[in-house]
Length: 200
Image 1: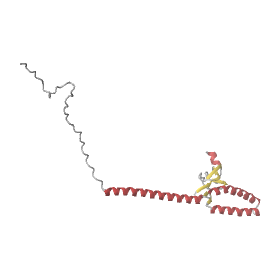
Image 2: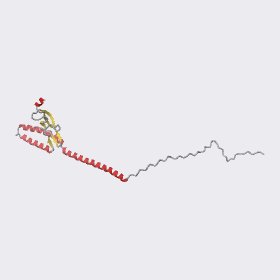
Image 3: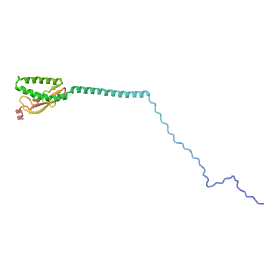
Image 4: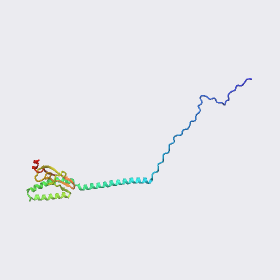
């Protein structure tokens, strides 16, 4: 009797090289957890409101000061414009008065009883009154100490009677308009006695 050859059961699986390798479970790594920041204390609403009010109060004070300065500056400029507004007109009028003065001196030279001279003297007085009414004041000259802020020295001469540095004669009148110099006076200044100069 022949013996039967045993065969492997059909259900058994034979491993091959093509089968994937079994997965090895990896250990899960949790991400780092950031530490919670310490919470800031809530701002005091009253303190915030007071600080904001102080800032606005400071801005308002600065704006008020700027407005006051602007008003004062405008008032000063307006007053100066009124006070010195006719300076240009008076400056152009002075040479005309100078020429009139020379004509008056020539008329006086003809004699004190000259009718023309008397008429021109009256007009000259009216012109001086007009200048004074406009605030133009004649600069003091003869006998005064030379002042470069008011006088313009055209020359120097020796004098036995007038000390050195003082005005001997006036060549052209000068005027001030209120507290400003409108035109300097043209003068001749003393150099003192001639003998004293020779001894030096």
